[in-house]
Image (cartoon, rainbow, N blue to C red; front, side):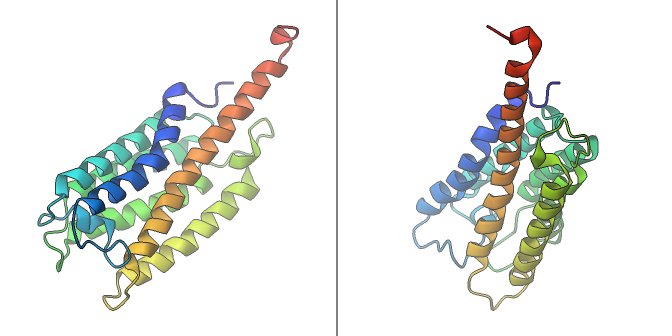
Length: 207
């Protein structure tokens, strides 16, 4: 069984790197920007001097999510749809950017919250019960990871909606990077499982 296509594997390798690289590069190009107190979305706001730098990385991240959803059949169809939708909502939060550093946009918040929710829920919707699938997509791992991400996302959203919270940027980066990294880990482990199965099959014995 083909669990992971090469495009999904490549997307998994790029995903966590580009996610962090985006706000690191954009933030370094903006003197005085504080990664701890300012959100990643502030880098892509309409009044940001690095708007198109961060926006480009957002769009790349959304595209990588679409690629992973299409070429990772190890995940059940509902999970792949969830990841695909997360890619689309990433486009949405990029298109509907926050207007300024002091204000927000209703639609940006909608798409941003939807992205966090979808990227927290996909492991549960991707769950497989068949023992031929790798452990990382089976019930224990799927439920556990979903609970962890749900708790983390709720904690971040509670911080994000509190204007007096001074560490919103740090919280966002931890959760966002963890979500992308976990998807990459799942795809990579599924690919390794696939490769071991190929090597162990009778047709490859002695080759």
